[in-house]
Length: 314
Image (cartoon, rainbow, N blue to C red; front, side, top):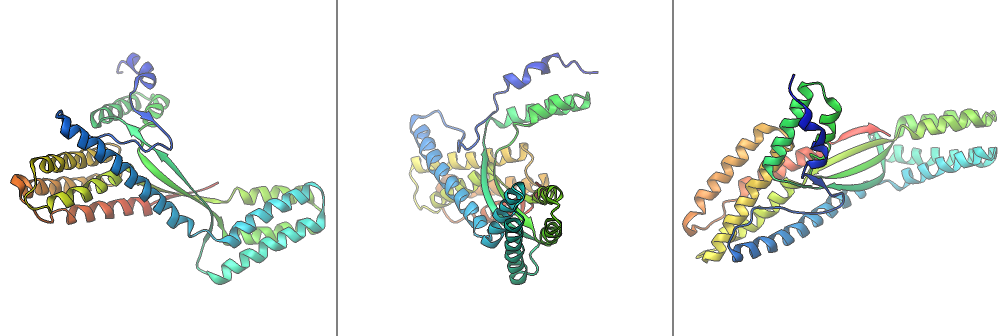
């Protein structure tokens, strides 16, 4: 049995802090004043790019919202209010509206299983070093080995740096059939049963979470800027420093994503190999377009994680 006394204060002493909704960025800053200023400016630009990409991702998901499904949900709640007042006709009218709206969606998109009604974005950003993340994960593993599941869970709850795009949807087939069954109950004036059934239906809403790892997003943005510098002929010493700082930052962000367990660990070996090649090709002010392979690899990696979202019932 390992000694666990030191773990009791870990939750309070961890320097890994979560800031929901914040878009903070950490990178390796060189000691020289000029390089430090460059790193700060780069940090600001990349933060803006990340925010812009977040809005685009959320915007694309919001475009999938189906207004008829939104109306159907609103009318479901209206039916519940009518049932509370034992207003039979108002409840039936609302339920008829629900059925009609969902029938339109089903007729228009017969292969659609879930109709999106809401999209929200949640951001969790981690301020930490890669070494601290690795030590925290090791501590959690030690705790799990000793059966201290809840302590490990508390520590690992902060190990996240991502944007979550969360989509709530109506399961079309089951919801539509359920509404028709509720209408029969209302017709028989079984208001209590009808109300319970509607609440049960609302609990079947499907919530899908699509994840965008922030370290990968940042690495992509840094690569774009590094690409422009690498393609610059006769770079100045300052530009070479900027390029070096950016490539160091890219590696740091990739290492952070790996330490946090995003995606398949095997794919990271390819990222490091490609980055090493880029460093060689840009040494001694050599110029050219060297970043495309790694940029494409990271983009595909990000998209694969995003599309592999998890779905749960509400």
